[in-house]
Each structure stands twice: as structure tokens, then as C-alpha cells.
Image (cartoon, rainbow, N blue to C red; front, side, top):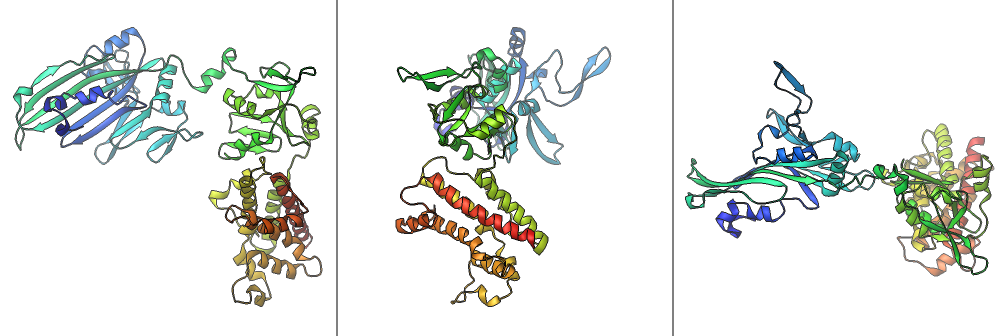
Length: 536
């Protein structure tokens, strides 16, 4: 609000600023250095241990005095006749520790604000341009600019609770209007809890005439939560942990579901879930990794799982208890009564300590792609499949048999398969290896598509040894399936059914069955190509 929107005295006494909460909402202004023709605003902040003596002392006067911390290492005062070194500018007499440090470089380089390193490490924040973010959730926690620093209130109050401290903000703001208005002059003491402000208005001379200046000087406090909200502070106290209940069976008489908490009792009780419980983890590869038989959330947690013949995910009840409570609730939402037995692979690895090949069809395809590239480069000087675009590398982690029966999920996985294979063929270099150049263009003189170039190359390379079309045909079927039912094209039911028939799928088929059918054929084709390359 400017002077034209309020009375001059209200403007100079900062009534709008005081009434608006002094920039202490969801975002807390912790530092400011902003000069303009209308005034200047300066604020610093520090943390102070929360004791009655400290709080009384810091609010005793609105003056900053020596209590305001610079954050710079310094030799302060004389104690016993010698200067005493302080690594952060604080002393036992003035124990406020700088939360924000104003870095000045003698005017040679632009000044900037630095935030207390302990706070950054406490939340493990990552700097991205003029923001510091939570690297897991990507939530912005600090907003930095040359003139101001804002911190999200939740993370700041959490830190203060852990520190058993308060945030002390030091204010020195000025506003001015042109002209001499002696009638407005005076001093006032706003009555605001947890603060000490002095507001003064006076007239000062200037080269371009007198000005009337309003100044607010003082301090205010921000308290933290009653206890830390940081996840590490909660997980250390098992008594306060929450454990969800899961269906583990049915009462043989009433049919009512039998519920057990995942608190550690009956640890090796199997619990079953709909396959779609995995979708959350596939959809966020930046955070989660879904391996055959194991799901991990960065370094926070992991859980072993299996998938039985009926298509249900199963885990041990006790393992669920090791997950964060919010994660338990995700699994609980997809909990099902037991259906079928545990998968043989899960039982062998978990109970018999046997090494079992858990590699699924999609993992076999990505492994074969890598093997083929290695052999092809050794023979021809370049890999058959180009490296994925940096924006597409997550395909290697997220390629999977659909876990829902939603067409969009199938479309996405077919598209991923195409990006991994035919869309990444090194067609320019591969074209140079085709001896019969006349075959590289169609009857209209246009270059033939990548799969045709691959077919021509394989036909020449392995003439008399193998029918190249047997390798390329599954990839063509994949392309047709993507085109007839993919995310970019409108679904043509007749074309889609024709492709499905070629895959041996008649009538209705689930998205998982469609993916499994095409992926199995692609896997056989890539295995054969890999064998041919190794034999020549």
C-alpha cells in the first residue's frame, strides 16, 4: 500500500505493515535490503535459545545494538586484555546466532544473502536457481533474491523446535514523503505481543527540499513448534509409531475379514494386494525404484514383494510395519483378502535363501538392448540403438507390464517400448552399411523407415543364415499396435483387432495380456539378433 491509498500519518507510521502481520504468514521474510525513492527496508534475523532470560533480554529495547548478529567470524572486544575470536560473531553476552548472513564483497562483486548452513543441512535442501528445494518432494522451502529471503513457515518452525530456539527478526524500515510536515512528527510504541518496536516521524532537510520520514525500528520473535516435525525425530520413538491394520484372511464361519496390525506380531503373515498398488511407484521414477522382488524409496525405505499366478502382489505383514504410516495407508487402500498362494520365487528367496532369477520380460528386453549395442559397436563401430534422450532415461526404470486395465497405461508402455527400440535405431549410420543403395528409398523416392533399413541390413548381413523378417516382424507388430491403439492416434477397433489376432489374442484381453504377448515376441526377436551377432 502506498501513500496515495492511505493517510500520510498512517503511511509513515507503518500501520498497514503492522496490521498485515509483518510478513509472517505461510512464508516468513527473514532478510531484506531494499532501497527506493519512497524509502528503504532492512531486516536481518538470528536464532536465540528459548529461555526466559534470553527472551526478556532481546526484547528489552527496540535498538539493535550489539545483539544483532553479523554471522561473520570476528575478534570481538577484550576479555582478559586480549581479543576473543568468535566463529560466527556471537558471544556469551550476546548469544544470538545469525540465521541470515549478508555477504558483502567490498563492492567488487554483488552482495548476496546466505542462509545458515545448519538449516540447509537439517532439511537437506538443494539449490536450484534462486530457490532451495526439498530434493524428494521438490517443494520450495527458501526463495532467494538479491533483496529478500523468504522461508516456508513450516520448515522454519520445525527447525526452531529442534533447536529449542526462537527466530529474532531485526527491523529498520523507513518511508518518506516530500515536504515538511512537522505536525506529523512524533514517536509511538505499537503494542504487539512478542515484539518491541519504536515508530518515529520527523522532518529532515535534503538537497531537493525537505522530506518527512517515518521509521520503524525494533525486533519481533517467531516461535517454533512445541516439538520437531522432522521425520527422523519421530521414527526414533517406537511408542509413538502408528501401525495400520490389514486384511490377512476371513473368518471361516462369518466370512468377515480378519484384520491384524503390522506392528511386528505375526511378522511372517502374508498380505495380498491388487496389482495396481505398484502404479504409484512406477509413476514416480525420480523417487521410487521398482526392481523384480523389491521396491525402494531412495534411501528411506524398501520392501520385498512377490506377484503370484493370480496377479496379486504379496508382502509380509511385518515388513509393512517398517514403512512410514502414510505409506502403509497407500498399501491398505489396495489390500485384498488372500487369493492364491505365494509365488514360488518369493518363497524361495525369502524362506530358503535361494538365488532365483526374478528378471521379468521388460527387464530382459532392456538387458538384451544393452548386449546388442555392445556387440554391434564392437563389429561396426557404433551401437545399433542410440542413447536415450536425457528426458527419456527413466524409461529404463519405468518400463513394465501394466498393473491396471486402463488403456492409457498400456499406451504409455507400448510407446516406451518403441522409444527404447525402433525409435532409437541409429538409422543414419545403419544406412551407410546397406550395400544395395537402391533399396533405401521407396517408389516415390522417399527414405524408407528405420525398421525397413534394419530389415535391409539384416537381410544382407545374415543372408542364408536367418530370415531377417523374423526379427523385424515383432517390432513391426509393436509399431502397428502403438499406431492403432497408442496415445497419439485414435483407436481403430478393426485394425487393433487384426493386430491382436496376430498376437494370438482373440476376444477381450487385459492390458497386461496384450503387453505380455507383444513383449514376449520382441524378446524372442532380440534374443535371436543377439545370438546372430555373437556367432559372426
